[in-house]
Image 1 (tube, rainbow, N blue to C red):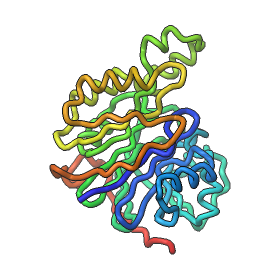
Image 2 (image 1 turned 30 degrees about the vertical axis):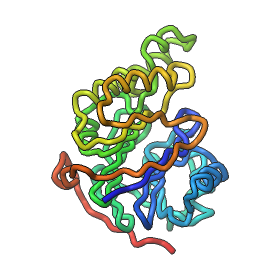
Image 3 (image 1 turned 60 degrees about the horizontal axis):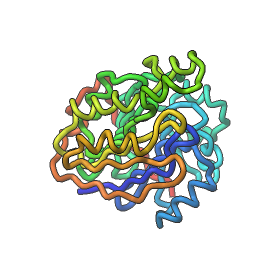
Amino acid sequence: MSLFTASLNSGSNGNCYYIANETEAVLVDVGISCKEIIKRLTRLKLSVDKVKAIFISHEHSDHIKGLQVMANKYKLPVYITKATHIGSGLPLEPDLTFTFDAYEQIGIGNLTVTAFPKAHDCADGHSFVVSGNGVNIGVLTDIGSVCQHVIENFKQCHAVYLETNYDEELLEQSNYPWYLKNRIRGGNGHLSNKQALELFLKHRPDFMSHVFLSHLSQNNNSPQLAQKLFDEHARDTKIVVASREYETEVFHIQSKLPAPKRNEIYQPFSRQVQLSLFS
């Protein structure tokens, strides 16, 4: 009863997250080059042949930089909303491009991927929960506020990539122009360390074993600062900073205590779709 996961890169310079069971894997966002993704998978002793689909959260370049090459070269189906696809400007192969709706359950072999809306300054942004073998792994980055969608899905996760983009004091003291500071902290930008910690403290389930602090700002945060803040409250949850420079190790996420089934949680829309795997 387990899944495997690694961050291949996390930050404004590129985001890519690998989640897998024993036989198939998905990538959430492809914001670094195809060449770099393959290099990092190889270092982790992970085969690209195991990757069966790509899910795109939104159209910003740090989430789609390597998408066209990766999808075309390896003939990978891409799940992307219509508005996000239009916003990306990428000419993806029609036969490999699929849309999705919030709370639609998409089967990729024995994995199930569920998207839900997020507050971010993009066309049609979504976060994801990848489920399999009784384990839920969330990718909750580029979120501007902790809405009810975030809370209810966070509460179902055994492990989560959680945005901790900036330290409030460092952002205030930075040389960023006011419009950019206000964009980051204005509710449709990014989560601060303190906002993420509040979510963690109020809504962490007993079965959450790992939190990967993600999308840290190079200028307005530091890995040491975020790690220390969460370590003080971690109890038996392992806290890992997902680097903006290199891949993490592969983590084995096990289901010590079961989460509720995904179809039992907050879902204003639910439609199950099963994708037959491409060879």
